[in-house]
Image (cartoon, rainbow, N blue to C red):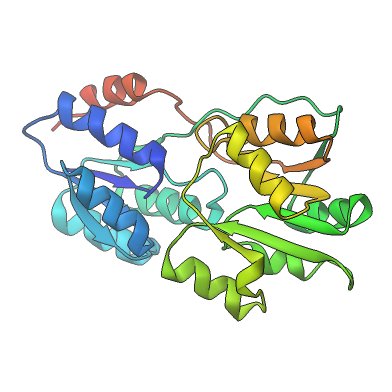
Length: 254
């Protein structure tokens, strides 16, 4: 059995390659949100486990089900999930493979500012504009809002699922301040959204091409709106291509 952690687009792309390479092997994929789990189920080719799994739960599952390899395909900013996966792999002795999308390779300057974390991004954006358009998802909204001074307006673009909307409303955002749409979106749509909501500054994560970062930056630059990119947290060295994951798995005894 192969266990793949992550309800991301990267994980779904990887699962397609894994199913083709290992047609007879059971593949189990995890996803935290209803939305991520539904996308995995619709894609097919794997058994889906929904909900967060800490180190203890992962360790128990690996031992009970005879998992031969753990693939961490969670989001580059899912620090806790990656930490839990590495600890479970160490406890059980199963190989740990980190599958991670490459960063965007976007240089600072020409309206692009880099921030070390979400708090720093909020402080930079507060200096650059009044209407701050967030494309960071819902999980780190509180960190941004807690570091913005009064008088700043926030518009949050999040996934169109109940959990994301609930996160926004619980933090005091009104329906007029929530844009629910599945990304990534095109440069043209980014331009339209930034203009529609009168954005003065954008905050996003360095999510690479898969996360639509180049399109966001291109749209901001065309509109001459500053954009703040949050750097990825430190993580174990990752593998960027499904073929490399498959080659590594073929070396692991079944």
